[in-house]
Image (cartoon, rainbow, N blue to C red; front, side, top):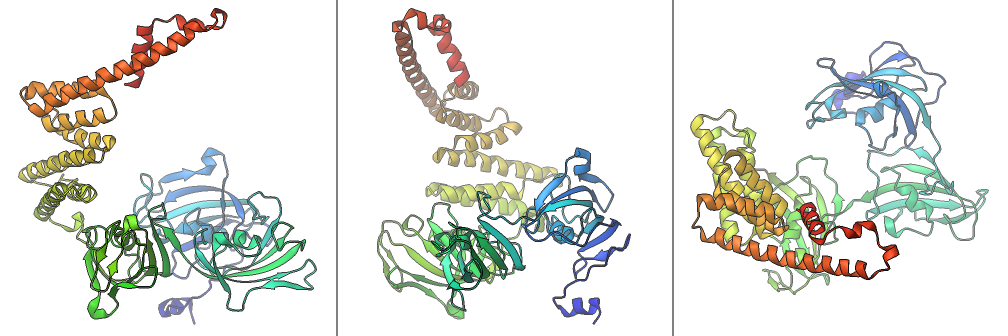
Length: 560
């Protein structure tokens, strides 16, 4: 069967590499997304292997116009990376592994093997086809995988695995292994034929195995030579054969252990839910004792919800946003991300206060809201106003996080209004001003001074005398005790509205806080100088003669 026939049939074929044919374009992948043209033949027959540290020189250009965007040659500094570890674009990993030492070749890389739809701004646009002239200088094939690089675990890959990922500490791995003595005459330990499953960081009896697994891909087989301290206790040098059958990826979504997701079925789909997406999920929720409190298993009873609308607990919402369409996961939710310290009633059961929750979730359907680029201008303006109004409703309910998301989305939809008519630009400006002012007010509610100032600055860039923006920026400055800046904003605002009670009250509060801070600093500096004055004169530094008022003023200036 010809290659084109194989591709059409969807067969997974292994491409054959030509033997050092100069200046001939050769496909390195079945889909033609990566090609190689040899400019200079390499030496020997060896090629770098997965995990080898390779050293190359390269020059990268855009195929569309020949623009050079990067070059190690220009820097006169070779570039190094670990082959097959995903440290570079896929086209490099696939291309460099076909090269011999000293070989120079041009790799032509389609977007799916390069930087894809995102590109790499500002030098590489979206969906760009790239050309790299690459020279393979050398590589390092020593496979000492111990963190200390003490030679305690030497790894050789027997069968390369699939994909690019390796398991992490919290992942649940399924492994088949055997341990032999130094001369391989005796089996010391082995797993069941179907493998043994464990959390990677918890390990097994052979410490070297978890270390090796962190470097392996799904389906990879490896041979290890391990020294004392990395193997079974008291057995000296040992030989280990290990195969990574599979693993379940575990993700600490909230980074504090509050919401942990274990992927049971990894979807190949790229679609994930975002805030405002409408989803249908197949779901079971259980308490630690096995009590079912949520049951949406049948096709006619799927749970439908809008992400971000608090129709389920926040922990489950966070997990759903990390899932791909058709993916299945187990999600463990701690009380602070679940139903908290109050009991929660469902049709199936009562969830006691402070309960851990265990969900099994399948993302069955996903419908994302239309993005701004999919809308005509009137629809963008209408949707932006809806987000602003929704944010206002949430603000009144003290739901700060959700309000922030609505206001941000409102601004995002009409951020780029260059093509709007004059009337549409005016409407857009009014909506953005309202959203940014309300963003500032919401950030102040959560004591985020920096983001509140940013929101105010966006308003003041267009309207330098906006009283609300000046007032809220002054409030933000006061959160960080930047009293000089706060007073400057209040002075400008009060010139516009001299009878504004809120601003006068804030100015009074500012003066009181400034006075209290000055008093506290004065006492601190006074005590410091008293201690210095009491110290032996011979040990007193000359700088201690600087007057108290100058030192205090300088410190205050620095703190502002």
